[in-house]
Length: 512
Image 1: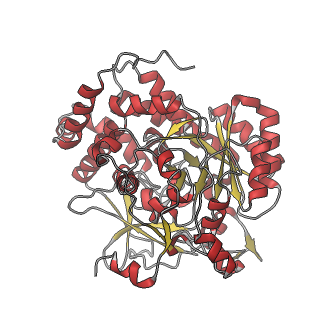
Image 2 (image 1 turned 30 degrees about the vertical axis):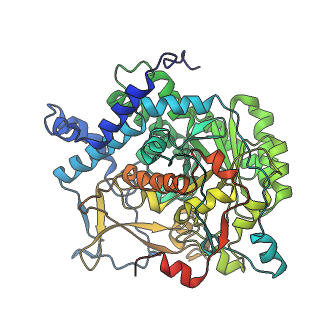
């Protein structure tokens, strides 16, 4: 239960100026952290999670398998060399993390989050556009990289970037208002309880994976409990003495989403344990087409009623989307392949053609669409298609202090610090899960394994909150250059400004 809204009397201009001052001024968070009398005690949980797999339970930890095939620098014993960030680097990273979390939870933003929370979801309307008509008539499958959007002018004052940042942008995504970005089910980025917690505290849906080390039901439930402990920890840090603390903390916890099999029997066993741990949002997940997401959604709703929220995926057709909505889903996820490490498309002969599906869903369903598979590289275009949320993996959490391994990194042959990043169906994750042929060969490998490098350069530190802020700026620019103030307005621009992108026009808009 949420407490009474403390924003009934709210000085909007004053709070907006305070938001701008906080964003534009130098904070003293780092200095306060360095001067903590109990600094070692404060850093202890980070050192506890900065370990190799097996020692970071229930999180994954830093994990190396014989199927990674990467150029690890080896110790004389043949082990992969690891290195810990220095104490000063950890302090700088964590202080930046707290700065962004404080910004994301500033009273001015929370005011607009709660305002959006009271609204009903507004489905993107059907619009006029020849883009997909022409593509369909010529049997062309358009990927998101084939699409761009023209500037859209409106006879009004320019849209303020700072105001859009102060107001989110938020959208009603499922049962409550949230940011546009969703932590995916990818285990090598999100099998860290603090990564899921920080994402949730940034007002984003955040999935607890069910693959990799978290295929174990008991470990996944223990992981969920650990996420909630981290959320209470962050509430103590940035919401102390705030009258809206209880409201905000509950919204954070509602963002924690348990990933389940798209098979009713398996999903219900997993959901029962996650429910005991406190999870109330669920994501039935299967990349293959079939009735699994529909029947699993139906059985979850039958067992738990309105006590839970359901975001179902992966949806591959208009008919399947309508069926899963009728079964009780409050949102759907689309997109198979097309991510940074996924090779499902190439192995199965699939085009990465989710843009056409998202467009065709306009006017056909009344629940939000979340897109995975390359959408995070094309945020304005994805939103203009009619998506309300965008799934993220390495682009947000890869190589950060929050991702599995914490402040502990591998070192490659060139001396670069990195963490291993394999697709959900990579050989490394198949091995972790024991999905092998003849006891030694990975089965149905649909993901590659690569490196997520440490990003510790001038102007950037390795916290997922920094990466998330960069993506949020992309979304804001998508609004600004279409003269709109919200995602709902962006969805409704008619005729659509979406165009097909040529090779030369794509080259022209990049640095060259």
